[in-house]
Length: 198
Image 1 (cartoon, helix red, strand yellow):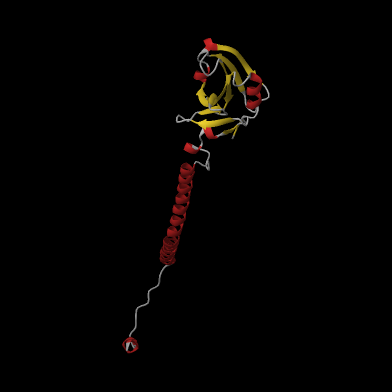
Image 2 (image 1 turned 120 degrees about the vertical axis):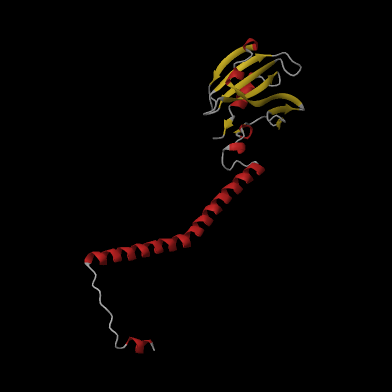
């Protein structure tokens, strides 16, 4: 039916100049370019967003697991506890017990005979009156300063403190041994086994 209506009718013919053709051509190209990019955006943005959320969720889950389990997966934050970041070989009759404040005590036959704590440089330089000897130790895995303190308590007469430098930190490990429970030779042999995990 539409063919019958068109028969015998003449439509005017319009000629476009080169400038008009270019303008129309540019408009059509910009429209198809916008549609193409809109199509890619609509199709791939949910995929990219989902992937980003998956990565964020995985990192948070792994970090939470490391905090709960105490495993040091990321080596930072609460998982990087200096009291879990070393090894030391003690005699078989000496045990280590972690205290409520985080410090570690050494026990032999139920008696407190030494320990380990983290101290600041200021704490290392306190109580200079009771210090009998100070020496830089050779043959250790890390820079170590030994100080012999005179204390006269029920548990010790003297204490050998070995201050071990932690790389990049203002704190030091203070590994200490009560005398007469440990003589100097035994304390030095034990300290040769002390290693900080990097």
